[in-house]
Image 1 (cartoon, one colour):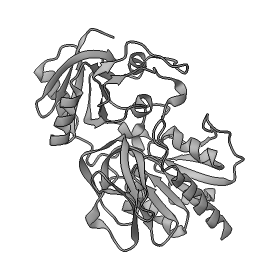
Image 2 (cartoon, rainbow, N blue to C red):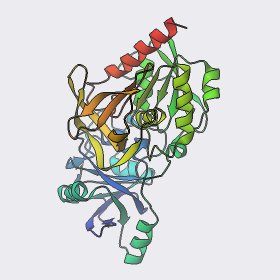
Image 3 (cartoon, rainbow, N blue to C red):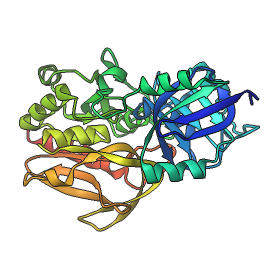
Image 4 (cartoon, rainbow, N blue to C red):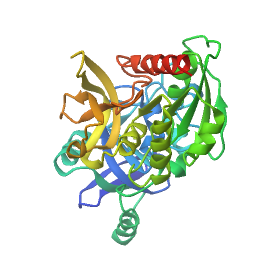
Length: 373
């Protein structure tokens, strides 16, 4: 690892000195903590972390290297990585690169040798912080300018920034399964979509066409899909008025709709709910969520800093799932149609697969829709 020093500077005033790895480019973003014990590559390349610096609470990161197959996006990633210790060796038959080199290639700075327990306590007590990673020495003036340049995620529409610029068809199955012959045509809105979501749809016999975030309802209707998927993504959902208006029309038209993470929040907004910024969000792979109908409890992967506002609930929406950590809304469905969303990540890879059955529920809704059309 590079022996050059690096500094993690929080806007609230705390300064942590550590060792630099990855890129030498200073970066600023919203600092959050993630409690996952595995899957650091998938987390770092998840576009939902755009403009965020990730503090990994698990102390040993980098031990399996990185590989192209496990990327969750073609381009783009988090703003920075904060860890306790960078693995000195990588051991995996699938390894193609080491973490430090991968971060350097993607202009992501990392800082190691940080007391991540202390840092996590700060974030839990004070909430997510604007912070900067500055490799090498720094001046207070330079640090202040960097921190002031970032205004936070509230009110920031990042979905249209990270979205694909043109439609494309996804045909790659999961490497663990063989593809089924396509039986259903699904349009997937890309607000920052994770690759494994698309794989799991293909695994279930879907022909998946991925479209830009600002694709209109008229353009979707022209495709004559059997179902519409709303992807995960970064930023504040409320400024995404273009998506919310299209989803409203799709609901009226009766299409089966499934939303995950940001897609779930946008679905809620289209159903006249509101969202709110959380104190420090949910980021990890060990979050218990209860299905309110069956009373079953699922261990889920989570990554979100916004949530549906309980006070905005209306008679047209059912709550289907709740977090057992803080009772926040984790799942909704519309009382007027085959439309539902889930806040966590049922596609998490690697991660718990407890709630992947939501993809099967989407397929069942598509079958019913096709049977009546």
